[in-house]
Amino acid sequence: MGVHVTLFAPSDSATNVTRVGLLPSLVSLEQTYGTVPPSIPAVLEAARMEDLRLRLDQFDIVHCHGEFFHAALLGERRRHSLTTIHWRVDELDRKLFFQTFPDLPVAAISASQGSELPASNLAGTVLHGIEKNRYGFSAGPGSHLAFVGRMTDQKRPDVAIRVAAAAGRAIRLAGTVDVGNPTYFERHVRPLLSDRAVYVGPVGDRAKGELLGSAEALLFPVDWPEPFGLVMIEAMACGTPVVAWDRGSVREVVEDGITGFVVRSEAEAVEALGKIGTIDRAGVRRRFEERFTSQRMAADYVALYAQLMET
Image 1 (cartoon, rainbow, N blue to C red):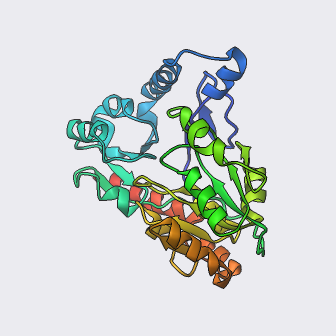
Image 2 (cartoon, rainbow, N blue to C red):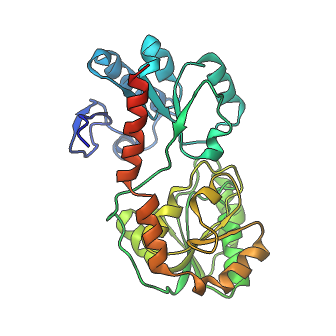
């Protein structure tokens, strides 16, 4: 779109733009050293902030996706910055953060998330998007249900398994065991696994596309104020309809009866699966292309950059 981008990222990141960063990623360090001290992420963020500090006067806009430290570093440049928060913003940590930095412009990733932001911080709303051709369309109808997400009580894979069983469907589940809640998988998910409910572990893009594309539907039984839910649009890119619980941003992403169904209970989810064949998979893909491509997301962000530059 004609914007020169410099990406501050780990040394093992692959990108076709100018990249700054001498230290490797946390994943790379864990592969090299095994278990690393829990302070390593904070060290990596401090190093990233130092990289930015040394070059801060080189940029018109600084777009941050980190947690907290950047707000203090930016100082007077805060008005020409934008922060995207990829987590919930309704808890005490964020409330204290916004209270301390009322002049930090924030782009909400959904209206639901934005409703929890102070008016002084909210610069606008930009829904996520992904590359149009990142996942291929599959005409379906698919032989199983899919769940993709962290194995945690926020995402509720156990609910997905129960719904699949009640609906007489097989289900394949993918995702990492949540480091913040490592016992959840062993206590609540593993006992429900069987030859009809298979956990395949973490998956890369190719395997995720195959899993979602070959699914009859994606189950998204979230039990928290979901700020966006990227896997919903990844499924839609494959043409796969979504059955999602009415929490957080879900109604902004899933169009009930068009790209899937929005439900409030396990019983409603089972009922929705009974009519999943009424959803046109080509129509699901079409709505993805109309609403959730990275091109649209980039255009929305560039429009926000222009507004900020006028202040």
